Length: 503
Image 1 (cartoon, rainbow, N blue to C red):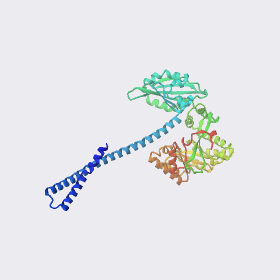
Image 2: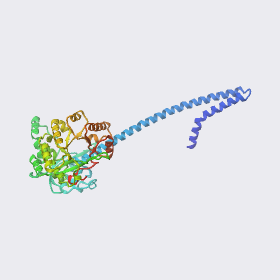
Image 3: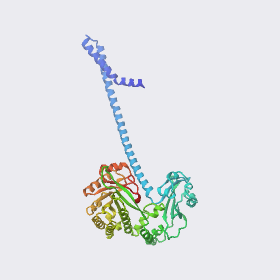
Image 4: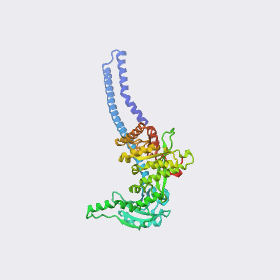
């Protein structure tokens, strides 16, 4: 290898050396030798010409090699840039999928799991784990019958063959939770079929619904999906569906207006809070807490949080529930023994129907006075979509609430013409930046520009900014660079019971 390298080096300079030697020989012949031989002088000039031609050939060859090498370098550079772009795209996709997966795992209101054809569990979400009271490693890779009891597995084992054969199985039955409470289980077993039409596993989607106290326990019923016959009277079917949709939603869930009224009157709810912290390290701002509500029955029976609220909204009872939250929150604040325990700002969500409730602000005023709580400790959060749907009600609500000394936050705020126009009329103390923008600011310049614009708008109207869905420390660093005031998300803190909260 060394000899080859040395030979190549000598070869590159051979023509130059020959030309130099011939030139020296010509100088010596012309100046130091009298009457030199004509033939000798001719040989020297020919040799010089040949060596010059050789040098020219080497230069042309070197130039060609240089072009080829430059082309290869350019191609390698382009390939490297593409790889960097693909890597950044992969990192962005991975981060987005992680956030989505975490959201599904934490919030989707069904027991979701995936099993291979050997019935070994390959995926399960939080609700699935909590129903059985097991840790992830007690489920991962285990057979279905190994971590479930006979009651749970009894109806499933007879349907496995049908699912593996490619059929979707539907089932409804009643089971007791680990604490003995009865639940109606709506179950779906969906086959996972590959490109060759072979079943390689199956999904289980199980929705446990609280059994109403006065409702008789449902019997187990199983159905396998088959092609449905076309209805004989399509318009009649549509009218019948429209007439009964509200009744079906409540009856299937075991939840009625009377049940909701009972839950509110008897206080069957628990208050939770999620910490909102200042982004700037040297900030002296108070810590904020967003107040969340969960039905006590959901918590006691390992049900997903928030599954009860859509029915409260459906029956137009959110103003009553919002009153319950306000009253109980103020009672909790009034019981704080020291000022430091109370010196946090608590953010309470306000439903769309509550914005139109003209008596709600006076209710808040009365409770503040009765329980002797400082009004500035409360911040009422209004969804931007609700405010845009009824801007007049939102404007009146915010004015009345701020006159009491309470604060107002506009949530899920995104930078567009409608949202900016809303702020021309509605005075707010906080802009809560839409989480879909925040979680993508590291990967999407458009989203980053919107967050920067929202923060600048907040400075202009003298409001503070709160970033939702803050899931990584890198996002916190970027928010700090932008100048956002507060951050909220699972990276900051998960929701905890109000009674367990601390400074």
